Length: 146
Image 1 (cartoon, rainbow, N blue to C red):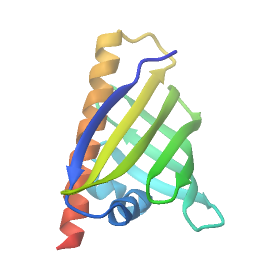
Image 2 (cartoon, one colour):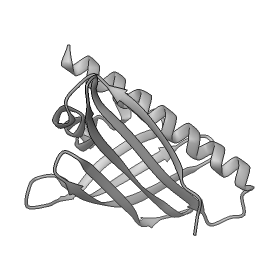
Image 3 (tube, rainbow, N blue to C red):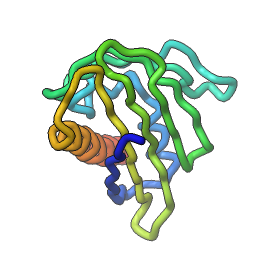
């Protein structure tokens, strides 16, 4: 089984506000440094995205890929890789937990690629993706909250 990278941050907003930003894929290029483009291909009965196509450039990892999403209210969203060029895994989740200061967001991510890559470099790329995503998410949520 592939190793997982995990990190958390506390965002000074309610889980519903955080999950709304997570679900707004059109805005990802604005706040997520690695996502160059995001396009919702299909939505579920609740209107939330089920399948999203991305163009990623994280330095060490560049690809166009599609993810499938599963939503659990305002508490959790998970995704799995549907198709990609160089990626063989891009599976992860955001877990949102209410805390006194707002919402604790835990991001878990597994990345794997078709070509051999030293584990240390792959873990570093995952860590960069996770840390930038959490910081970008926090900044975006807080800027929208005013």
